[in-house]
Structure formats: C-alpha cells, structure tokens
Length: 203
Figure 1 (tube, rainbow, N blue to C red):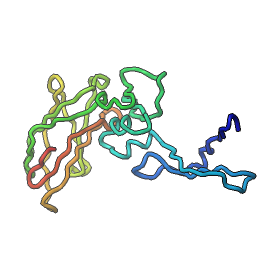
Figure 2 (cartoon, rainbow, N blue to C red):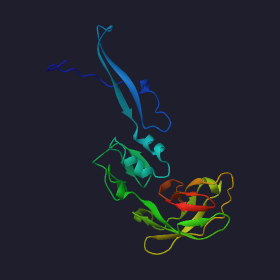
Figure 3 (cartoon, rainbow, N blue to C red):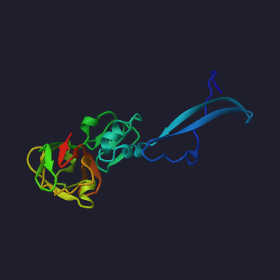
Figure 4 (tube, rainbow, N blue to C red):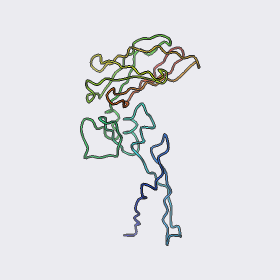
C-alpha cells in the first residue's frame, strides 16, 4: 500500500480461464482480502485476447482486430492480431481504429446472380500492395469444399468466373464469400455478402 492506493499483481496467466468461443475476453472476479479471510472489496475485470478478436468475424479478420475495444493491431503479412505496439511499424501493419487501411475486397457486380447459372462476378480490392503477384481464392459454404482462383483485372478490379449455385432448401439464404491469400491460405477481409432467393442479392 502506498499513498492510500493498493497495488496488486495480475493473476498468473495459468489461472485465467480460456477465452470462450466467439468472444475476445474473459471476465474474472478479483477480490482484495485482509488477513487472507476478510473481504475488503471486489470487482469484475476483463482479460482480453487480441488473437481471439477474429472469431467475431472470420471473413473480416483485420477489421475485427483493429475495431475491437482493446486497441489491437493487425499484421497483414502474417495475418495476426496482437497488442498495440508503437515500436512495430511498416506498410504491413494496420493500427487500432484504422479499419479503412485494412486489405479488403468489396463492391461486387452484378448485384443479382441467378441460382443455377454461372456468370462472372467482378469486385474491387484496396490496400493490397503487399500481396502483389499473389493468387487469391474465393469460396462460400454454398460452394461446399470448392474454392476457385480469381484473377487481377485492371486498377483495383478483380474477376471471378462465377459458380453454378444449387440451393432449394429455403426461399432465402444468406451468402457470405470468403477470400484467401493463395500463398498462405489465410483469409483477407471480404465484405462480399448478400442473400439468395432464386437470385443472390448483394447487400
């Protein structure tokens, strides 16, 4: 105790429970005891895990990382989310609250894709300089275990030759495309999402 303040050591990491699925922190109750038996005060504390932030949105790992409340940063080279470190810098680093700097794919065309027909899909990419000359793969649950490579067109545009979707279980179904770096098999942020009811409607 110093200057009317009580300073406590953090719990040993082995005593902190694992981060639950779809969550990037775990809550623990911390107590201050007098003579190991009398409770003086207690409060709940959150212990966060930057690496777990991507669980919240697996198709947009960079955005999920840097928009978390924990001030995490994204390494686009090795596809990892870690604690803020101002000493680490470079074109491959995306700092906290800078989601606009995340490598990502967006703005698909056309807006309607008929089920049962293969038609080309184009979309835009941005902040992709560090992936120059890399191949990319696109897929979705409706493509089952299939992932197809797509090509660089011009400027920031990309082309995917399309996929012949087959789905008749429900009138509507959400569609969310993921995109992977062909060299590492790691996901790069994709906001290519929509829903289908005989036609796939992009949002």
